[in-house]
Length: 136
Ligand SMILES: [Zn+2]
Image 1 (cartoon, rainbow, N blue to C red):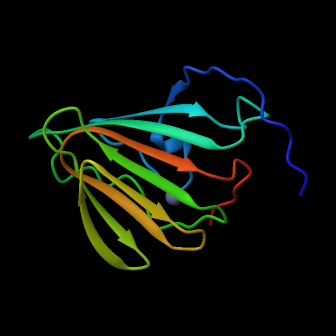
Image 2 (cartoon, rainbow, N blue to C red; image 1 turned 90 degrees about the vertical axis):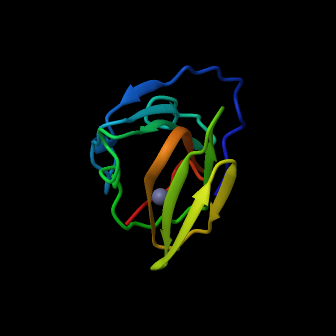
């Protein structure tokens, strides 16, 4: 497949509900900002969304916002926090892994996965390396 040349692009993104993403639902304490995607930037070379996450007594145990899914693109997740720790639970092909910031999780195409915020505050960044990805 011929790839379009990358264009100089500056985007501040747009806040969108998690429920706009297939296999995801809205939960208290997580704000999703779609930074770049072919939906709004046709020449986007990849897809990046940042989730601002805060888990506290109001939403602890209620941040399971994604159901199992997979992509035909590799996915990179960055779990980050300025202070304190952001803790996430990943389920990758049925196997649970607990990850604490700072961390990067590289999920190869075809691996069934979902993730859930467990505690702390920070950002969870999702990068799909192929902007034209499909998910099932
Ligand atoms: Zn995914």
